[in-house]
Image (spheres, rainbow, N blue to C red):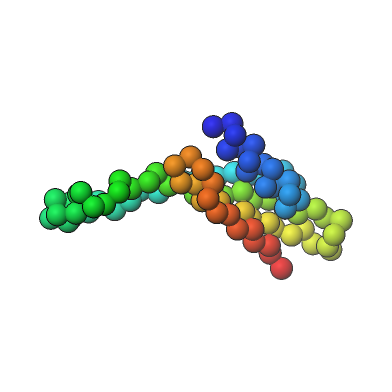
Length: 90
């Protein structure tokens, strides 16, 4: 998944993160109750594979007296990044 790594690093570059670190987590969907599976199996879509990616690092030090911590949280569904948020420390 080189495209995913390249996308996350481009988001880090856009946020001006110096030496970004990337952590990824798989999200397991809770198993449904047996009765719900049998009754609703025709109407329910299969659960999508979800992952959360966290990109963290320090911002450039020439903009502030103290280094700013920047974090990007990206959500991946079925191999596509569908949402991301950027957070900045004070």
